[in-house]
Amino acid sequence: MSKPQSINIRPGVGILSVLSSVNYNPWFAIAEFVDNSLQSFLDYKNEIKQYDGHQAKLKVEIELDTTEGGNLIIRDNAAGIHEADYRRAFRPADIPLNREGLSEFGMGMKSAACWFSPTWQVRTTALGESVEKTVCFDIAKIVEDNLEELTIELNPIEPTTHFTEIRLSNLHKVPQGKTIGKIREHLSSIYRVFIRKEILELRFQDEVLSYAQPEILSAPFYKIGSESSRLWKKEIDFDFGVGLRARGFAALRETASTARAGFALFRRNRLIQGSADEGYRPALVFGGPNSFTYQRLFGELHLEGFNVSHTKDGFQWDENEEPFLVLLKEELNADPIPLLSQAEGYRVQSRTKDLKKGAKTSTQRTSKTVEEEVPPVVEAPLIKIAEEASPPSDLPSTKEVVANRTVSVEIDNEPWEIAIELSNDPAVGDWLSISDAPWDGSVRRVQIRMSLAHPFMLQYGGADVSQIEPLQRIAIAIALAEITARDSGVRKTKTFIRNINKFLRDALSKP
Image 1: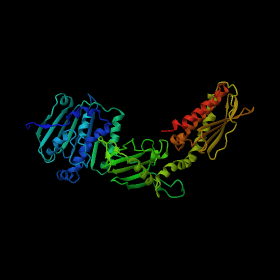
Image 2 (image 1 turned 60 degrees about the vertical axis):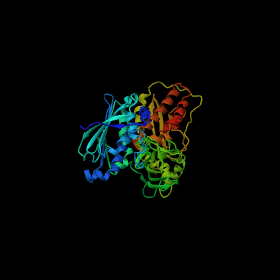
Image 3 (image 1 turned 45 degrees about the vertical axis):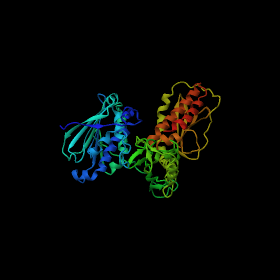
Image 4 (image 1 turned 120 degrees about the vertical axis):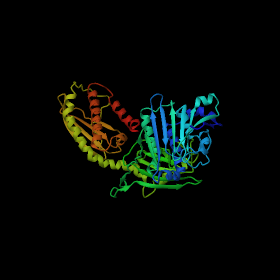
């Protein structure tokens, strides 16, 4: 072992004590370490390939142990921390000479390490150097003793060896449960460009992370149903002055998603905003959460000339976000691929066709079940007491009926005819409509209509039989419950139906 040396960590050492309060998400804190590894590899790529061969790539391994206070290890095969950079690497807020890469504030590793842990260690050996250096940080001791220097432990090593290993112990915040899955997912999303280019192999808990892009919609323009399908994707590239530029692509998801749509915003190929299920979806472009654009539009946009927050999890837009969004919206809906128009129009049109195919089968299945199963359930005597406001004896006709069926059943020794109708008329405001003709002495007639064009159905109803049928059965159950309750003497039961329709249209139709 070589004689220990020391490293001066002044000035700014007092900052270390407050870094545990930085507003990080754990995946962005871990990303600070990955950024350092990537920048080291990119800076010394040619030299590394001379040692490791032309096919050499960066490998970063992340290990998380949630037991005994929690431990986090980040290990890479990048170029290591060279002697010339060593003091700057550990001195708080020492800005690097080159600020054009992924490490630009001089705080990334220090702030993330202190956010995670009060005690952490860095062991590294630089490419071409024959010494391994280890330095340990105990933040409480550094602050309490007002330390200006830390001891570096030195050990000889082969000059062809190059790596950095960071160990964080006794974590302030130990990731648990779903957070661990979110770390995995967000890291895959943040570094997707480097993973796709095979520059980076990123492992978390011994799993190689990968990113799968959503399938892109291929369909005719909804206004021209007779045309052949087109791929709903377009390249984006515009400059809006003062050195600001946006480039990338935008597209429509084949399968709509309330959680997974939205833009991912990059700078220098590293995602800054919009990772995983936190897509960038400004209202000026996407509308509200219940819009179809909100569920289908996605893409990757690389922004140039913008500054980012010191935690690198958001852009500092200043006054430039609105002009950016105005230009982006124009680009998105420009011919010949008007993405916004297709996003809003396609879902309703395409679903109408699918609903017509599946709704008849669904209605037939449900009506058979009503015939066979409903009479035994309704056994209590029904007392026919008129409500203050009599229900309509017939439902008004709609523009388009997708499927209908009338079934005959006997309930409490009385014959009933239940007409089940599925409508696709957007003018029908209620999800469930019920008409109950007065008893004519021979048969009890009930009409039940469920609107497939209702926002609740468009959001959650689906387009195939398996998705429509359960909701249709629930609608029939609600209708029969309302009628039999009224017949048993319960008053103002229509208020119950009105409230169901109101809640489903307003709050419950939103994702």
